[in-house]
Amino acid sequence: MAATPRSMPTAFIFILCIITAAVGFDVPSLTFSEGFSHLFGNDNLIRSADGRSVRLSLNRYSGSGFISSDLYDHGFFSASIKLPSDYTAGVVVAFYTSNGDVHPWTHDELDFEFLGNVREKDWRIQTNVFGNGSTTRGREERYLVPFDPTQEAHRYSILWTPDTIIFYIDDIPIREVVRTDDMGGEFPAKPMSVYATIWDGSAWATSYGRIKIDYKYEPYVADFSDLSLLGCRVDPIQQVDSADRCAEALEELMSADYAILTPMKRAAMRRFRERYMIYSFCYDQHRYGNVSFPDCDYVSSERNRFGEWGDNKIPPKEVRGSLRRSRKPSAVADVRPPE
Image 1 (cartoon, rainbow, N blue to C red):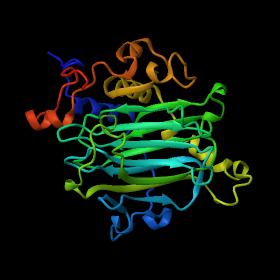
Image 2: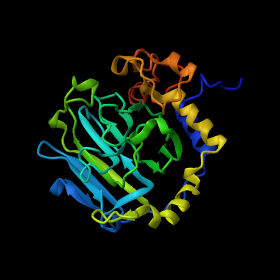
Image 3: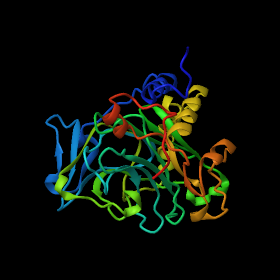
Image 4: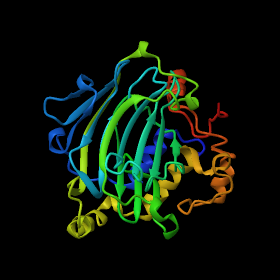
């Protein structure tokens, strides 16, 4: 009998999504010195001999991070990331864009945040969008993924155009934010830098801060490779007339494969969100009451899956714990209640 979606292994379904979503983006990668500089952490940042990969580590003394050498007026930003293994509660690894150093009170930001966990529990992957300093109206979404991100590197990408933001995991679109007039300045619009960091987020990262980092497991190490920065570079001091100067680069950006969501890509995104999204700000009534966000696509089937706190009532099974116990991929239908 043919396998149904409720009996297919999650790893197989994710591979199927990759095949149907895209063959793979053909994007050039940079060496570290071609596009980035050391941000903080002293010896906790180590470059490979060829400059194609970077290792960030966190210990009890410091985290670490790097930043793009330029700001970008829109772009496509990508990195392959392998996350720390073992006990990682309280650890946050981030790949994101921001202009907070230039606009501290009205900053824009686009986040991939990776939230560590205790042994045999999966990393949570979070995306977020801030525009014009809208930090009191966070637009977080959180996901589990059907693979162990500590075993090998996976590619995480952010597309940012004047009208659309798309987050990708391994060439699969997982989230789209479309600018509307009702969003106003809450859609990011000012040039941003690209960051990668690892740091101690014990105050909030794991179980809402109830489980803290344990430095007996230090150092916590994250590896970054396949670094890509595509877009119009902007001088951080002289940002005038960037729109006119960047028109050609923007046209090229918006015509690229990763900027076009075909019906097959949209189907892959829908499948991912149905199976792996475990929190959505759109449905968090305790945080936002009955406020409707203009960038939320309120789907009735999705609304039924999320409770009043915005959490998925029946999240997918944890991959790392189930693999350790069974040594086989977990099934989508084999779920347990949220803890």
